[in-house]
Length: 133
Image (cartoon, rainbow, N blue to C red):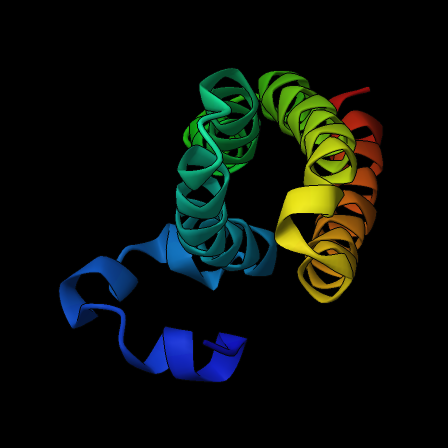
């Protein structure tokens, strides 16, 4: 499913939350849904530990973004965004290790999504750090 189609099928009550306005949060949730399918394919090969690590690292991205969003101080926001950044980089590593199972097309697509998340988080972290000083 492409990103625009995915956005259209999200429940209206979920999208009413102000956090939905954060592009990086929306993209990370989209990746989480894609990862659900990806890990299902990995589990078919009976590689539980790889699927588990991949799903945990991808899931941690959006969880830490939303946790940072809910914090009052910019310093705390930046700290959680940094954790999300670390999870995104870890997810790239796990996708690299999964590429033989998932295939080149899926791998390249997920890396592109993760790269966009990493770029957005880097900007957000710098912005929050500047304001926190």
